[in-house]
Length: 328
Ligand SMILES: O=C(O)C(=O)[C@H]1CC[C@@H](C(=O)O)C1
Ligand SMILES: [Zn+2]
Image 1: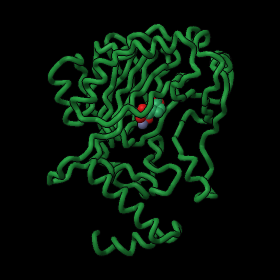
Image 2: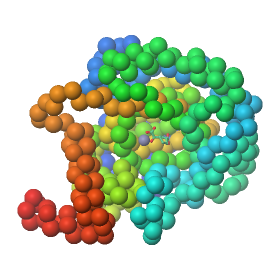
Image 3: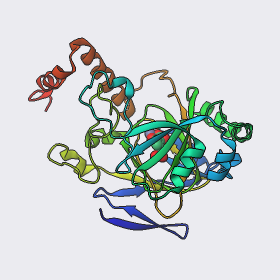
């Protein structure tokens, strides 16, 4: 895999090189009106100076070991460093599906000692919603997040409720492959550096998500390291937005924007916290529809057809019959 070096604030980063062109995601102070405008328009932006998780800037492995308590945390394991999400609820209807990662529950202390034993061939990634089993100092840090700004941003953009804060602690080199989410996300970086590759929702036809009933629903079928352009020809036209997200940065990751996240080598394990919000309600439909709305419509239609057919195996033929030669 070819790599290229990127320079950000006098720091050098070795990143994987892909064939698609990239443009930089803007980096603005969180109080800059241009930043607020980008968020309002559902455009990604890296926000500096918010101290959204300022009370957690001192979180490192040692501090978390001493203060996360003895609760169990979900730790994913992958042989190749890729952590493609899959929905366990869809396993029963996909008997032949082989999960690409395994996961187990362990104490943070056990996770940290596994991390320190660099010899392990496997890649591991702790991904756990912050819950009430954490120690009181973590609760205090969490309480002292910059909720004033977060709540104001939520209100100003008419987002729905905050649904979860996911604590992410990853080894250097772990990758979350390209997918989209159906929630707004303020992604706060505490330690280490992550390279984000984002794709506008209008790139849906370049990224070929799995069928809606597949455990990898919302994930791209394209292997960025070896794209199959016979099956996925339009991937050749993909255009990415790119950003290196470092400590104290907050990336606004708009709903429906595709993203691939790479924890970069040479800067230690990465610690991040996500703030996921439900979407703003659609008060009045305004035409032309935006790309996110079209994705929502496609998802609803796919769900309706799958439900009506009640036989996922017959879905591909049904869709071909409906579209090929008629809408192609
Ligand atoms: O925040 C999101 O939307 C995600 O996909 C997260 C899941 C793993 C995280 C990572 O940094 O690798 C990104
Ligand atoms: Zn995501």
